[in-house]
Image (cartoon, helix red, strand yellow):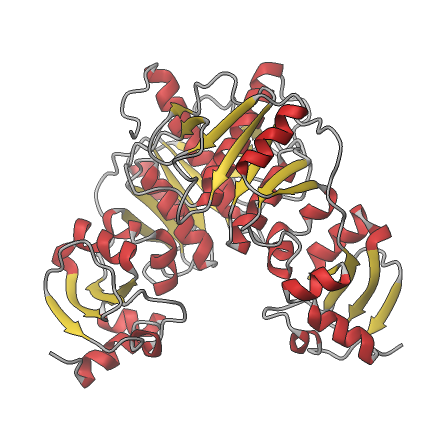
Length: 259
Length: 259
């Protein structure tokens, strides 16, 4: 059936933070993102817009609305949607005790590409829990969803007013470690033994980093080149995969590797 | 003095590959990029356009042309130039024997953000040599320069027709190892002992990866989450900083860390 006015208006509204908040929905665009949505959270799907050019190799559930070739671009997305767009309900915030050995915390990370990349990287590392503070980009904005390839839909995300609120919540769950990544000073991330032992690891925004006034153990990545600093998502990736490396080195096995 | 017609036309042309090739010049925009240019390669600077809003805390050399507030945006750059734009000559390609322990090779990486991020990350890791194959984005395009924060100007970049040409050149320099990063199969990157011992480490483009027909030792990053694959720049970052980690662990010291 064709796209009706109400649906078209809903889709358009989901490219704004206000629209997502008001409707409780968000969009996933592109084959890889939508595939991830149908694989991990099919119960959240409202409807899907499908153009003839879409190369879909997975099963769609829910209402499927055929649209004209190129029509999706005019609805609000700025880049190629590859002919598929799914509207789904936003997951509700996670609750209860996390079971991750450590939790990455994004502090006021406003760049959608950086936020999404960290989500995708955390998911690839086998982490299911990720926290962030107010002032960060909306994790369910179209740009963050695209950048994360939809990884946020199968993760437990929690928002806190600030780092102090995150620290208090973590302590209540028995997470006592509180590390703040810093481009310039602190303990060497490669030799800090308890970095991932029931802890939060805070990553700041690229422009400002984490407020120097926030108490916590500073931890840094050695940078032999001395070149400014790393992009926030690159720093987060190094921390997250240092966790993976230790896990595999400790196990003393290559089992579980892909391929 | 004001911007003359010839200069304006030159700046506009540098946002195209053709224009950069024809003139042998390129642009750096923004405070951090331009600062890096004046720090590392002042001898390449042709002239600088400066608007009143620019917050410049470094010394400019060469011809400085005052422009009106907001004028830079109309010249071709799509994002905020922060009121400063420097035109400089492209560095000539590197020659002679590299002295890096290993060389990252970008194979047909077309995304400017990914290419630039890898350049910036390699520079932060203390690597000065980076190779790439034809089919990659131009390393001196405005977008790559912005994404790398100008790190390419103080690095030795070399372009090869394809991976075979890179391998042959490397062998001539005594680099015998040839590793191909693969999202799905291969040796564990954390336990491959000779990964950085006189070797090339090839990173493919995100969409296609490296042609499976290319011979070489496949090496992979363990991904416990089993989520698709990492972004190309994230994978490259993990390899590059695994090199840094080994260097610091081997040295058994934290000396040389920032701060």
